[in-house]
Amino acid sequence: MSIPSKPDRRSNFIGIFFALSAAISYGISQVVAKKIVTDYAEPQVAAVTGIFFGMIGMFIVGLKDLPKDLKSPRQAQMFIVISGIFSSMGVLFLFLALDRSPVVVVTPIAATTPLIAIVLSIVFLRSLEKVTLRVILGAALVVIGIALVVLGRST
Image (cartoon, rainbow, N blue to C red):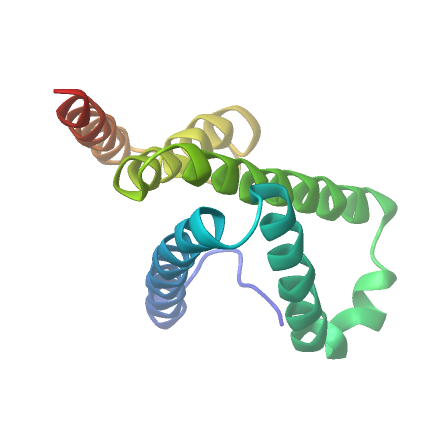
């Protein structure tokens, strides 16, 4: 699948649809993960099992593009491996957090991903991503919301 460098209106709409789909999927998975680590399995086992079956599903979905992607430059393959490692670590840390804390506290904290992505985009993707004042203000609201959830839980 080719990705346009500057998304048009339709491409942007599809991207937003996929982002909302990701949010729904992650929301469901976190509630299910809490049930798993509470009643059925240790967090590490649950995370590895989830990643394994997710990998099988993603392999099937990406199979048609695999020959072309295997011919990509070594640097691109390295970035894919690094991304996979960090994604897997994120799943493991999420399961560990859900084993020890309520899902209503863990989920907002885990949802700070955009804050980290914004900072890293400013540092590494200056030529590809535009971080505006509106984005920074939105991120600040996220931080305030997380603080309210965490502080509200401790009172």
